[in-house]
Length: 332
Image (tube, rainbow, N blue to C red; front, top):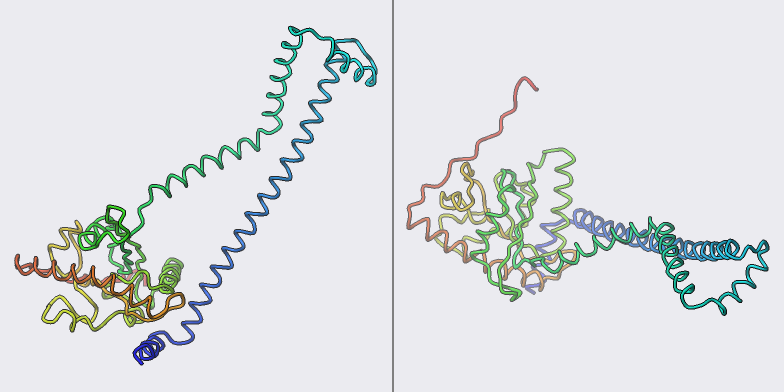
């Protein structure tokens, strides 16, 4: 019965048309990835074909050069005589002459090989370098123990490192690799009616992330589209009773001590740390959603309790209200 109520709640938050739109975006991304893979295989097949043709042409060139060399050496005018002389010469040449000829032939073959395949060797070198670079990146990559999505549109996207360190104080080493790492994804969404290619791309990126429940923590502000705020947990007051920094939008960061930690001198007072509701999505079931919610809530709970305690102990004065953006009348 509880799961049925959760599903009905999800449908209320995400109507059928929005659900189909998100699923369409998800399917299109899979199709684009498949097309990229098809083109990559076609390029590899074409490269193999060209390499095979180049090798055949190279072998012909070497054979031709050897015949010409033997013609000059023995003064033979016909190709047939040259072939006979090559067979006889292989049996009669002494060790010293054979060694000199072998060295000369090897050098010529090597030079010819590099000349005939210089483009492919160059491409292979580039591929090798890129491969080493990607391998190094994968080996040194830090898998995040928590991912935070920042859709607040107030220059907080320029404080990724500081924001990541702030959250790392309250995150456990989930994957047990010996260190804690928080990944911050900046998607500065403006107001609902804000237009532009960049905003369209941001909305598409955020909707794609909503397909999964892996990333539950979202940093919002007063400009965040009410549609996105509907998917957040608005019942945090019952989970943190009596906490003045908890409201319907989440955990307010209206604290000077937070601004100092983020090195954000003019930080506005409308920033909140919100957490998404545990509802099923395109990729995840209700059970998975609840599991990811519990993991993220554990971090949020530590942050709320610790920062609230620090603010109360220091009588934190809070921050200035966010300045409203004005439009230059001369541009109207």
